Length: 176
Image (cartoon, rainbow, N blue to C red):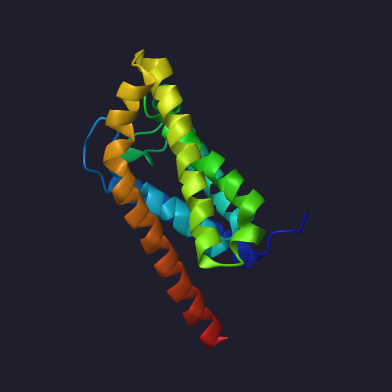
């Protein structure tokens, strides 16, 4: 495993902070509408799978120890154990899946979007199963409340994450 450079560590910290800020941009709902999905997929795309996963894990760790980095300025293990904690854990699962498929996804836009759709589906499944476990709601009922309203907004956020990452990487390469 390669060592992380100072640039890597700085980038990871910035993306962790971005994820925390994006979680605070919230529209209350059963599962709040936030910009976390944008930040998670932007981190994975911009930093790469490994460093993106580290950023996501650091974000979750900060929230787990009680820093108010989750939606609604919340934090703590109680939030992770609550109904929406599975979606937060699903972000890390998405990162791991992204890591596993990143090389193939770099071969083309369709492969990248397919991998990102699989990552999002994994996040949805992880979160919805946890939501069902905590609330006692059936899977179909939970998915209709916790997933269906988010599919299109999340697809837009992922597209935006790709666009911003591509543009930023282009700017960085042209300055080098």
